[in-house]
Image 1 (cartoon, rainbow, N blue to C red):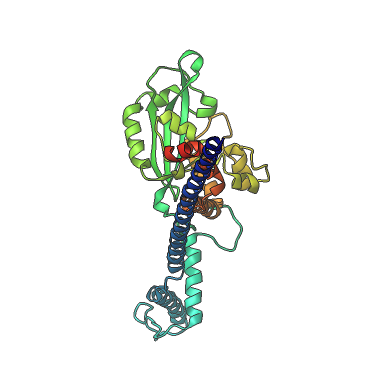
Image 2: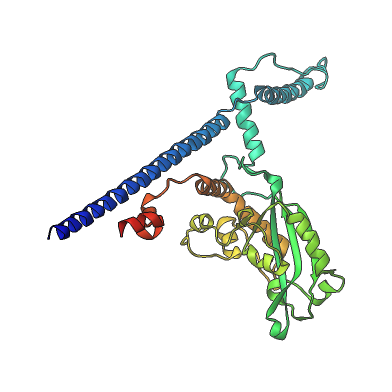
Length: 352
């Protein structure tokens, strides 16, 4: 009888000891996890603080006053030259405008501010008048260089049975200022069964001495490489060109919610280039029986992009910054690691 009681007491003591060992190991692992979380949190704070410091330093970078003084001097020089011209008509003894040039010795604060405002209006291409942007204007968005932006539009013809397969027949590329960088007819790889003249504007004689597709594709790739490509339903153009362009380097006016909102349509609706050009640019395109013109369409897409360029680029920058910023870890998503299957074998063995 005594032997049985001693066995029971011994078994219960072993059970308590196993439970105590299990709880100790569990507490040790929890403590280690908390320390790891604290280290990660501290590291993330340091990264965020450094990013904010860099952003602040860039924002408050001192202005180059010498450039402002030069601009003010040049504007005052032009004004003095004009005054000299008017005085020459009144006085016969007056000297030539080029002989006397007034250069201010000092610039006051008002002159600097005026020069900065005037130079911004000239460089940006935007004035106080409300008018649709022209393709000759320079970029108002400081974060995106105008030389990095091109506009693309392609015209397709049909090949195969019923002309169901689309192939490239003409490609036009414009720079930011509306200058034509590339505009050539392209010979499709397969015989044309439908010229789609009503939409493409392509006729048989356009393709008589057209450039082979492979050669045209290489030339187009060399122009688009490293560029921000603006277009309307531009992914259809990429498909017939058989190229892949980075998504962050594409500005498709067909899916731009900013343009839809500006035109007074629901944000989810994809509008045609013709409607957007009519509503926002007061411009009629794709009219008549001659079909579309890829240069005209590319220029319309470029001008639509310029309407919302600043807001569009800022929105993309904010999105990229939010995606790249370190996120606070969600510890709720790691609770399942507390289950027994994730514990070491010796701990689970002691608890059984």
